[in-house]
Amino acid sequence: MKVILFGATGMVGQGVLRECLLDPEVQGVLSIGRGATGQQNPKLRELQHADFTDLSGIADELSGYDACFYCLGMSSAGMSEADYRHVTYDFTLAAAQPLAPRNPAMTFIYVSGAGTDSTERGRSMWARVKGATENAILKLPFKAAYMFRPGIIQPLHGVKSRTKLYRAGYVVAAPLFPILNIFFSKSMTTTEKVGRAMLAIAKHGGPVRLLENRDINAAAGVPAAA
Image (cartoon, one colour):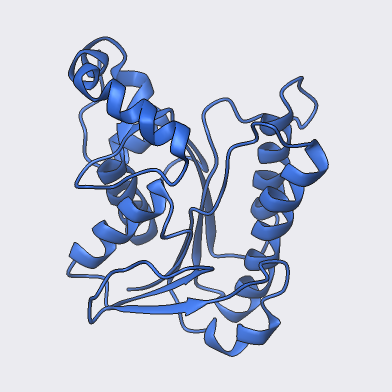
């Protein structure tokens, strides 16, 4: 299996890249991002691209892939709806739209978030924008598309958030994760589980297109909580 990965330097993307490089069934990973991942692996090829609203300059590199894991994203904190939509909706569709006709057998997996609003009419700005992005992707002619809606994600294996505030929060919360996993297991996952779930869904498909936190953990092979 050959994979395209967007957002490999972010927290989720780092975890997904790690699982892809460890998986013997993944032959190659093309990472597309503004910066380098810092990883060295014979499976990994990197393309640094500045303008995520226009991938025409690298269009010739986008064919021949089985899956795309779109992990690029940012917090909506302090952003206007127009600016957040530009980064979330416009960037994602600018990537997905050229991929679909070039890879008719591709599975596209988009990282959304718990609480995403599929109606696009709710009060939460970020949830509306994420919902609009999900709905637009699901209309594209991929073999299959899945929306991942993780809850609280615990970074593992040295993975770190690029957001300074989040990074500090994870350091403070680290001792509490074992307790949180006991009492809030349905809302908790890890970067490892997200990566493994993406690979499992890309290889074998799944029963639902919108995967909530519990579905993600199940796809990763984690027994469901009672």
